[in-house]
Length: 182
Image (cartoon, rainbow, N blue to C red; front, side, top):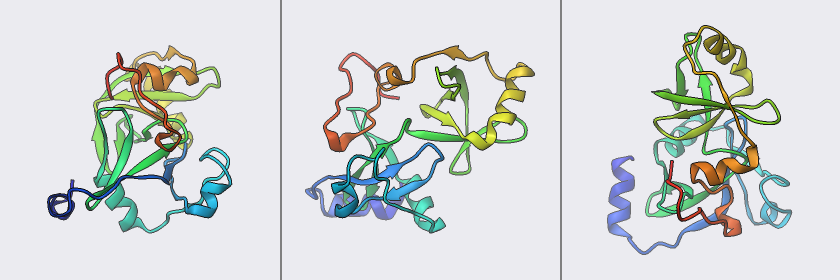
């Protein structure tokens, strides 16, 4: 987390949390969701405006975390902005050598999962994430070459419960009490 964010949190500890205003889609793109967009429905129906400013995106990703309830958020100074997830808390990019990255940071792969729709997920040291659709060839090659484990078959709707994360904090979803947070 950025030092400036930590300083703002200490200076203004009672800033209320924000829900519904930020979303992460299956391509790893961030979306701003104002009141008008939120009135159109949940994140699956109305994404909002795609963020394209690279420094803003980097700031969000450096200050991205999870609370004890499995709700992912962006710590924006003293305010937590909870994130609407299209599917998972991360969308992994796969490098030519099979390495997984998020925000230019390499993460350690633990396991792979394949859902009923043929979507590939990677469980890592940071948590569960969807493998970016543009990187499936590199992932398939890593599995074929035995650098990645053979995927376990899963049901996509069960992933939040199994891996302890909340897709929509704005809709009041709760993490199961007996599941660990990623």
